[in-house]
Length: 105
Image (cartoon, rainbow, N blue to C red; front, side, top):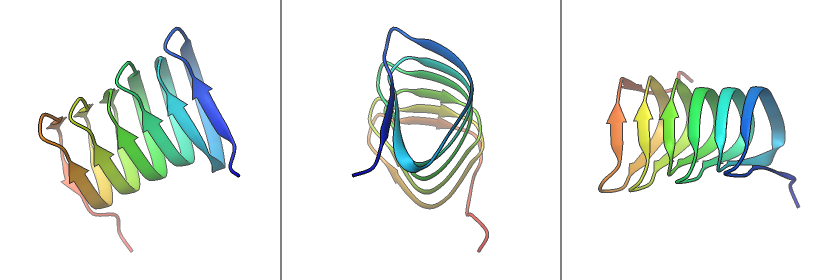
């Protein structure tokens, strides 16, 4: 079972978070950078910074650059920034502003 790092909705966190084999769930405010295998940005989250993940699910607000092999944007997801991904799924109602490109092999 992988480890889960959870930032709850009442927390404000700044810095660098690395969890190469674990899951990171952000429900609060985070300013900085995340490197993780699997990241979830919950609907209550405000994220400002860069995310590098194998799998990223965005249901909250992200302002920054994203690199994710698999990127899912839920219907409440809002992204403003550069996106690099090999697989993109966008639900109706999601908002994306920025450039979308493929990750180089």
